[in-house]
Image 1 (cartoon, helix red, strand yellow):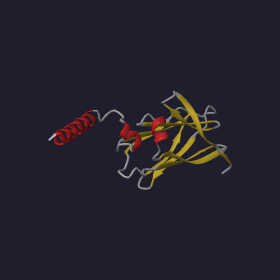
Image 2: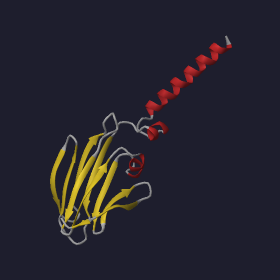
Image 3: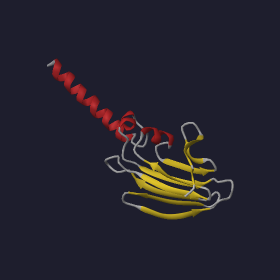
Image 4: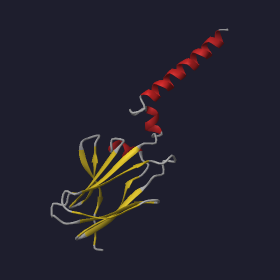
Length: 151
């Protein structure tokens, strides 16, 4: 009889913790860090070129072509999407300026990226020396990709 009580107590605790987890679904849990929940994301590309060059941006995924953008100094291009259930969502962009270009992933399934983006918003800024990601965890831009010269 004692084993049955322990078993029922275990089930009760499991149900309470599961319910508690669903109530707090808007916050990040340990389980979400290991296998991130399906969530909504925003990606932003910013022209931070102090030379006042126009930044050409063309972003897409396997399923969505977001079109070509010409951004002037300080302009932003943003889009929102929901991560797919297989955690295989991938967005990449081709960026070019007067004397350089790059092809770069701006969203992929990676816990480090998710952490840097605060689990909801990735802000990429094109600067003179390359492309920076705003790391919300430490409050500063990180240079992640340098410009390739030529065309």
